[in-house]
Image (cartoon, rainbow, N blue to C red; front, side, top):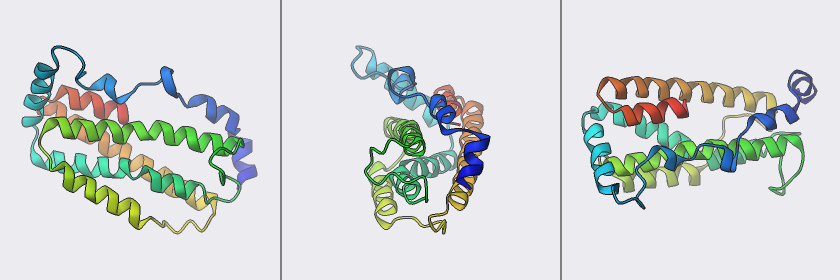
Length: 189
């Protein structure tokens, strides 16, 4: 499987597609800056827009955020794939570098949704955080059995499902007047 992947897309190309650090967007780019004088007004505006979004949409958004926040579990899974593993956490193989870069990029999704939900004031964040902690503590086994083919197959479907869900939440947010949430979901999708 790895030789097939190397033929269709060398890892060096995939690594170049990942933006990290200063070049990439950060969650704070989409949220009120609490270091600015107008932060109270900006948070108030966020909350007013969020208030118009039905609770059912927020339930889906929470589910999306919990999925994104489970990232440590997915990183652990990627590290088990034969030929793609990163046993030291600093392995210089192309797959290990890609995995860490992808994880870095994906981490921003959960961070942004978590902060948005917190600032919206519409959710019991402690209960959500307890759920995330249980999810990560309990682990996750999609049955990949160290096989990168099975693992990337799962990952591909999971990525597509979250893209669709984020896109749908964004459309609904726009419909209910929460242009900030629509922008966030569009970026993450």
